Length: 368
Image (cartoon, rainbow, N blue to C red; front, side, top):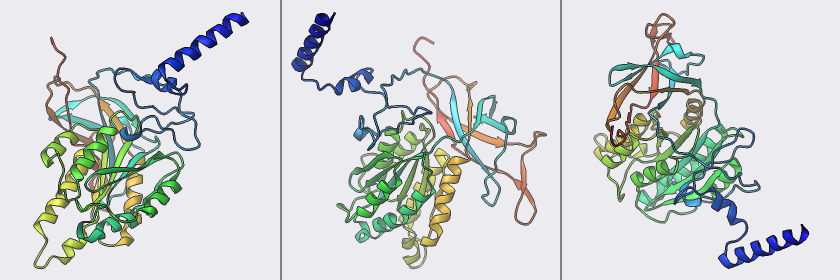
């Protein structure tokens, strides 16, 4: 037996040497399914971080890599929707049940198949415009404002940091070490380019999050201008209609509005509208603060929205037609009437539901 084991070891060593494959690469090879490796998924007992496309295969510092995972892709006609319910003053409503929700798909009521208050850890990318536009003023503004968001995250949450100007740069891969990200923000020194390729940066990040499991979001800190992207606004909006990633936007350019003589600058109004549309389409929210003192409340709202989401799902009664479908999420009381909540003055007003506005249906399989 010893001789056989030794011979097996020698043959394996010769094979590895001949192929030129380091021993620690076999784990990575074992994870491959087709031309690309599936993104790792998080285990409940020892969560492993999602990994953006630029750095697949890297494990976080001081943490063993996750065990090999095999992802099986199954085409499903289930549509997931994350929804937040608030009153007219923006206070979040919790404690609702499946019976309190209705989903309309192009006006047709759907059966809510799955329902759960979503309390999973947050997975979020901080996507920051850090360019030399306007002398770098707004880039530095985003830098100084962004640090306070890290204080809203819990130890089990995952955060990554990316910046963009002419190109997108991954500064920190997903980590639970908030101090590491804080140090990276502090180390941002001087922007390299004057361009701000917002559309490309958003679409690249959405694509990298496509196979990440669980609750995922992007926090965009930007003026809203796009100067040199390969994708245009129509491309961007079309892609955002297909994503399940929630986008929150914080506009850092309100100074431009304040400085505009004789009224708001038209180009800046368009930039604000772009950020607002990104958030509205994906079930997020957009803020346009003028003072640094507003930031703690805004970042608290981002974290609160993500932690208070209700996760809903339905199987559309409409065919798989490859088209964009408008969806409306309604919330009702126990009698089936629109849910009303008292405002600060005690007046009853309808509850507000924040959820993505639609989805793009897959095409029917060939032969159907």
